[in-house]
Length: 285
Ligand code: DHB
Ligand code: FE
Image 1 (tube, helix red, strand yellow):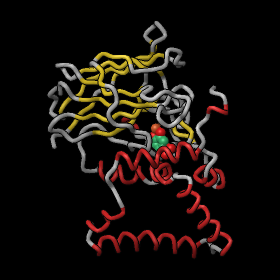
Image 2: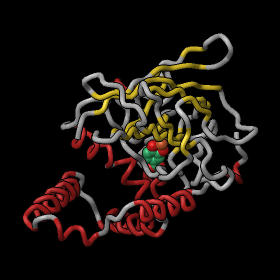
Image 3: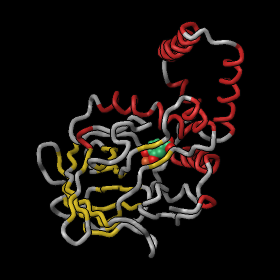
Image 4: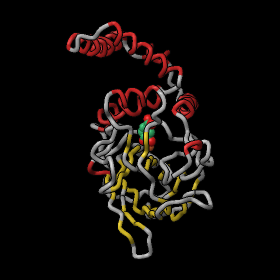
């Protein structure tokens, strides 16, 4: 395991996730003006109603109200809102949006996507440190339209944690671009990505999100996963994650982002390399 002093703090990872979100997204609170006032009012009223009902049901007192206020302020000051939103809320939005999407099941994007990573050929090795530790893993497959047509030249954008559970760009000891790449499929829409098995990921636990998880008696873990976004011209992008059969926390993901259709079962090919096949299907749009 990586030495403790190398661990990213919640503040570091959180602030980084905030900066990442601001850089990648043009979203701003001013966008609320694009939503009709009746809809804003209806949604906010529903959220507040849930809060008011919880206060009544659990007979919440002033000490608890003030602790909640202080906690909300600390989440903002620590830059942890992207972490919190992606762990506790994004899965519900993803499921809602995915309910109208055919093809490969999606999952949450999470806070650690970085655009514009190195482009790689269809059969490739993901960039990694010379001394990268981890069980070799090969993910191969094909990108197709839902009608079965292979999608040549589509992009399989992949990023994942290392064998200690850290993401490049969000942990100071991991070089930029490590275990990230945009794989371009061949003329048959195929790809074969050589990488290493990621470890389960622990939500940074030394900040307010971690305090909440601990105070609730929950655990801060996500099962090991590969993040993948598949893009093909004229098709609806699929953002998803792939998990590993038998992996720890598969049935208790803190971010509730697993789906049975997204579980790989890699097999050792006899040389110590674990191999798995996964095909992606995209609908037109
Ligand atoms: C978080 C981290 C992830 O790697 C992920 O996939 C989802 C959420 C988080 O820390 O919020
Ligand atoms: Fe992740």
